[in-house]
Image (cartoon, rainbow, N blue to C red):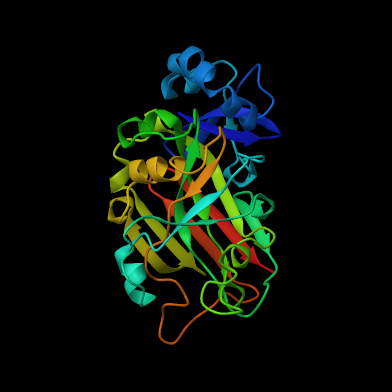
Length: 283
C-alpha cells in the first residue's frame, strides 16, 4: 500500500498499468497525522486495504503523478548515513567504516517530489538514496525488531554542497553542506513496508539531464536497514515520521575525474524500483 499527499489531503494510492488511482483517507488531515497514530492506523485501517480494493472503490480517481505533494512535512529528525556503499567510499578515497557513519540533515531542507533549487555554490552534487520512514519508533530497537518500527520507504535526494562540507577542513560543515533550502527532497509517496517485497533487490538510479550517473541495488549497502535502525535508536529515540537517509552509491559528481557538478538548467532525477521517482530542477 502506498500513502500520498495529493490536493492537500492524504490518499491511498495504487498503480494499475500506466495509471495511478487514489482514494481519500478519512479521519486524518495529513500523513504526519497518520504516522503519529501509526500503530492504530496499521492495525485498524491499513490491514483492511489492498490495491485491488482501492482501484475498485467507488471513490477512486485517476491521479496526476506531477501533482504529488511532499508526503511528510514535520519529522522531528533526519538522521543520514555517509559512506554506506563500498563503491562510493572507493571513489571518495575513504576507509571502510567500522560502524554506520551518521550525520544530520536539517528539517528545513525538506522539499517535495517536484523540486527546484538555487545553487549555493558551483560545487553542488547529486545523491540518490532510499529513505526509511519511521512508524512506531522507539529507543534501543533490536535489529530483529527493526521492521516493526518502520512505516515504509521513499525515494530521497541528499543534495550536497561539497565546498561547504569541507570549508574549514574535511567534513567540518558536513550537516550544513547538505541542508540548504530544498536540498532534501522526498517522495513521491510512502510505500508501506507490507507493500514492498524484497527491498534489497530494488535498484536506485540517478539521471542528470537524462544521463545515468548512479545505479546500484539497495542490497549493496554496507549496513542494512535493520542495522541502521538499531544502531541509531541505540543513541537517539526515533519518533514517528522521522526519516533516515540511508546513503548513496558511486557515481557522484565529486567522485568523477574530471569532477562534474550541477549547473543552472540541469534536471536531476532519482528513481527506485516500485517506489517511484522524484525530480529536482536547478534554477
